[in-house]
Length: 292
Length: 229
Image 1 (tube, chains in turn red, green):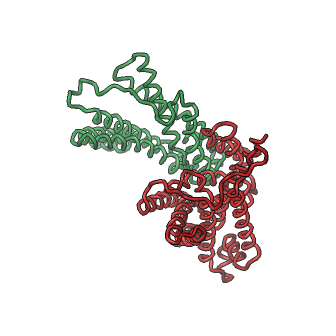
Image 2 (cartoon, rainbow over the protein chains, first blue to last red):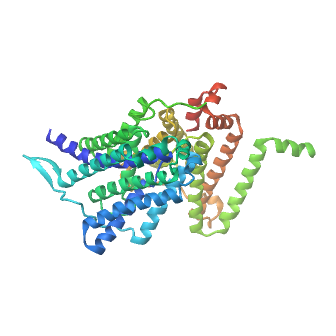
C-alpha cells in the first residue's frame, strides 16, 4: 500500500511534466495544425540557456526566468522561420521539418556546449517527506505540480478572458474571417508558438534535474511520452492533453514499480494502443466531420 | 529489331530486369575499386537503401506516416542473428546459409509489419505517427527485459562465414559484406519498383490520395493499408 502511494505521487509529478509537454503540442496543433517534433529539443536548448545564465550571474532563479523567456523567443523564432508556410504544406512536410529541426537543435547545442552530461540542479530539495515509513513526495514534486497547474490556469485565463486570447482562438478557428475582422492572424500564430515554447521550457527545467543530467538528448524520452499523452487525450483538446499526460505519468510509474523498469515504455505503448483502439482520435475528441 | 525494342519498352519486367543487371555490374565494379573502409560504409548504405525503400512505399506510396520503422529493422536484424546462431550451433555451414537466414528474417519482419498494420489500421495522420513512434521506442525494451535470450544491451554476435574461397584470396570481408548488402538493396529496389507499377501499387496510391473514393470503387481500404505495412 505504501508503495502504491509513493508510486502514485511519483506518477503525478512526472504526469504534470508530460501534461505540460502534451499541452504545448496541443496548443501548436490547434493553432497551426503542425506536430511540433522539435518541442523537446527546444526545451532542452532553453535549459542550456538557463545553465549559462546561472553560471554567469550566480543566481538560479534568474537562470530559470531566462529559460522561460528564451522559450518564448525560440518558439516565436521557429514559427516565423521554419513553419511560416505550414498551413499550405502537406502534413508529411511539417513532420519532416520538425524532425529536421530536432536534429539541428541537438547538433548545434552539442557543438556549442559539448555533448557531455552536465550537472543540473533542481529548483527545490528532492528529499522526500515521509509519513511513518512511506515516502511521499519532495518539495521538488510539489513545485512541479503547482507550477504546471499555475501555468495551465494562466493560459486558460489568457485564452478565455482576454482580448488577445479571443483573437488567438479566432485566428485558429476561422483564419479568413478573423483576417476580415482585423485580427493579425500571423501574429497570433507566432504568439501561440511562443506560449508553447514557454510551456515546453518550464517542462524542461522541471524534468531535467530528475534525469541523468543535462545533455543534448535529455528531452527525447520526455518528448515521446508527452506525445503519447497528447495522443491519448486527443490532439484537439487541452483538457485531454492534461488528462492524457497525467495518465501516462501514472501508468509509467506503476509499470516501473510493479513490472520493472525495462517495461515502462511498453506500458506506455499498451496504454496508447488500448485508448486508440477504443477511440481512434483520443479520449476527448468529438466526431470529426469528413470532407468528401 | 523495331518490334523487339518496342516490346522491351512496354514490358515493365524487362526494363526493370535490365536496370537490375546494370545495378549489379555497377556494384561489382565500384566495390572492386574502393578501399576496405569504404566498402564497409557501402555495406551500411545498402542496408539503409532497403529500409528507406520500404518506408518510401509505406509513407509516400500509401500515405501512412510511420515513425517506428527502426523497430521493424530491429526485428529483422535480431531474427537473422538468432537464425545464424542456431545454424552455427548445429554445425550447418555453407554459402547458402546466409541467404536462407536473410529470407527468413524478411518473412518474419513482413509478418510483424502486418501485425503493426492491423493495429494501426484505424488510425490516421498524427495519431498513427504517435502510435508508431511509441512502438519504435518501446520495442527495444523487450530485448532488455528478456536479456538472457536477446543478450540485452550488448547485442548478439552474428557468426557468419567469410567469402567463399572461389572468389580468390584477395577478396576481403568488407568487400563481401558490401556485396551482400548492396545486392540485397538492388534486389529490394527491383521488387518494389515492379510492385509500384503493378495493380498493387496503383491500389496503394489510390488509397493515399482519396480513401473515400477508393472505398467507393471497391477497394478494401484496411486490407490495402495492412498490405503496405
